[in-house]
Length: 239
Image 1 (cartoon, rainbow, N blue to C red):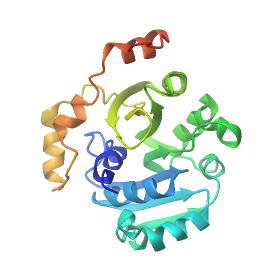
Image 2 (cartoon, rainbow, N blue to C red):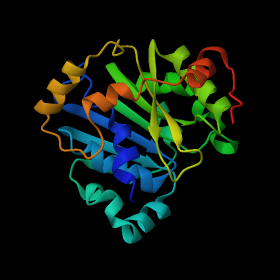
Image 3 (tube, one colour):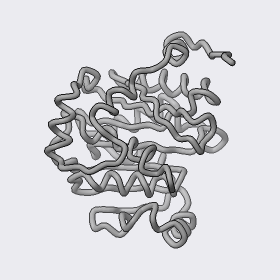
């Protein structure tokens, strides 16, 4: 809870991007980590969003989080704009087409039953669910402890989407601390300037503890070992 305002607001990073309308009509969040999704939902609803759909795999966990961790969602689950569905996010995505402006993916690690959730086919189905110029935000694994996963997600997103930009976010209580947050779209958002972000941020009248337009851009400045990993697949072995 102490670091919630940091990492989880980052999942709503795409929302200030200038290609999106002043009001994001529809936003979808898929998660295998209910408590984190609740926090991301709360942050996303700070934006002028007409509707937000959250799909969680385990309905019982959602009930327990609402009962015992109410500060995580802070009423967001009861917001009239929110629709919360207990079900398989992959099945839900595959039934959608041209439906969402933004899709946020904070999924279980792609092992076992969740293996397909980092596949090219899955990302293509996510793309079909997006509206034109839509954008996705993906929790893409730990740079330090999951380099193979980070590389696979980056490569597969790059196959499905024209533009992909990784960002480094800090989550001190998780393994290794530095995680990949990848943003992807067929719209070229990669040259977005600080002035454009600042203008939209001010127009949205946001109040945030962690996020700022400058932080948005600086988090995409990556150290060499991460650049080498993404470009060449080299895993660092530094002490």
